[in-house]
Image (cartoon, rainbow, N blue to C red):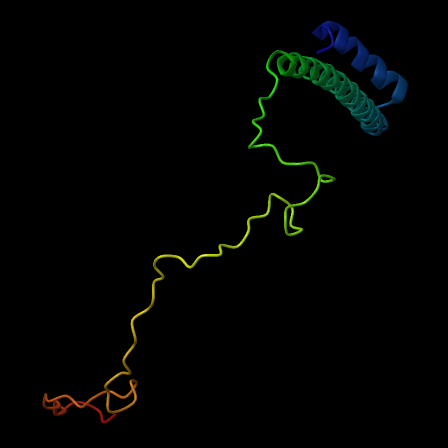
Length: 149
């Protein structure tokens, strides 16, 4: 435990029994346990706060490092923009009909082939589709022990 040998612990217990008394000793140990628990909780809370601050500082340092590396890479390899791929700025003049130049215009010619659906013939049934037709098979006769339905 906290570097206390068994003989030292025995001396502490004997002094506690003499000073506090055997009747009040359990209540005193309960209070000591509560105080130790609160102290451990406060220490844990403090340690968690310190760890969070350290993590935030590390993240800021990493973000600065990544930003510097990103800037260096972008300076070494600038993006290549072709004239056909570039879009005009929003303030530039629009197309011939007032549409922005990046909006596709409707085709003026009729396409060479347009698919059409085949005509659908009405069903050739004499009655509604939900009526079952009579079967040509004979209906089974009930047996002697069968109950009528």
